[in-house]
Figure 1 (cartoon, rainbow, N blue to C red):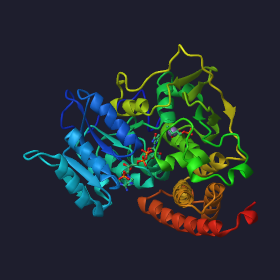
Figure 2: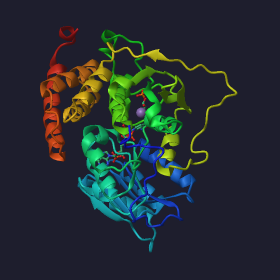
Figure 3: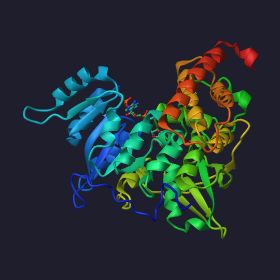
Figure 4: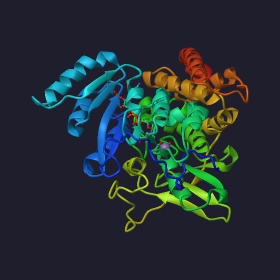
Length: 424
Ligand SMILES: NC(=O)C1=CN([C@@H]2O[C@H](COP(=O)(O)OP(=O)(O)OC[C@H]3O[C@@H](n4cnc5c(N)ncnc54)[C@H](OP(=O)(O)O)[C@@H]3O)[C@@H](O)[C@H]2O)C=CC1
Ligand SMILES: CC(=O)[C@@H](O)[C@H](O)COP(=O)(O)O
Ligand SMILES: [Mn+2]
């Protein structure tokens, strides 16, 4: 555990480039500013102007009115959109908000725009992009010497060895709620004394159902997460428990704990965000109501806590917190994720890319819910065992992803055409 990426006992000093220096508010670049993570981060920033200052924002380009509003409110110097066709609407939306004489932010556009911003001068980059498209910005922020507050788990999962090669110990501060919890619990003990990590899962909207009972569930039902309000992809991933599988790989990579010492436990209330069990039998758990503003604030403010970032637990009210073992036969995604994590190389990238395609196929209609993980498992099996010991490159990841996406689309289309009685 000595070379772990996320290390609460080690401080990483960002490279020179923080425009305000150590005494002013901490400068931030927010990637994915219009999404669930991004908007909650901005809520924290706006409530703490003495602590944080946002220099740049990036998004895909789907919500330009919101992006322009954020840019104006925060007085950023640059905004980026991945979709070049979104630029005219963004220009108009900015012009509508900025008065005469107010300096407009620079606009960057195209698939590399977020990556360029990730390396721009600032103290901390918050990566709140969804999907493995976040890999290049993650690598760029790390190489530029920024602190990386990481919500975009996919970038770490698909590029584990690449991220490890460029990140200094302590340079990544996890934002994912479970990993923030583990990070906080690990601050309370010595790494050598860790027996296991216990990652909690809400169980999603279909907790307690059998695989047969899952076959006919609709996107609307799957998007109704019982405890968290999040973007669509991570919400579907929570329903399939692929999210938990990704999070086990994420925990392995962040904290350097082997898979056989990472356990998943179902905790429907989502108040305990994860736990660390130490060798003497003591367990440290982190508890707070399900509100991402707490881990986001810790991610961008570390090592300081942001006062009143989110409400704490109301101990005056009676409450029950339950814990159940994971049903691996209805939800095989966690063991499958451990398998690909253990294979390493391009296997996690294949798993994630196939899943991203299947989630889209399910949301568009056609692919049944259980077809998501079944298809991902088929694509992973076809990919086989990557050669051990060879070093992974970005090109390897992209090639594996391209293949996995195409194959997943093919298999998903076939599954969508199969009548439901043939599937049963
Ligand atoms: N939401 C949550 O509570 C949690 C989320 N996470 C993780 O955080 C990440 C973000 O999730 P979430 O906020 O829910 O997702 P959302 O779908 O709500 O938001 C995604 C954001 O990414 C932007 N985006 C999408 N594609 C690109 C691209 N190619 N280039 C630049 N920006 C892009 C979107 O822009 P646009 O609006 O223009 O489409 C949007 O701003 C995911 O990795 C998720 O797993 C982890 C824990 C909790
Ligand atoms: C809030 C957060 O961190 C999500 O990734 C969360 O983990 C989703 O909940 P479940 O995956 O446990 O349903
Ligand atoms: Mn999580």
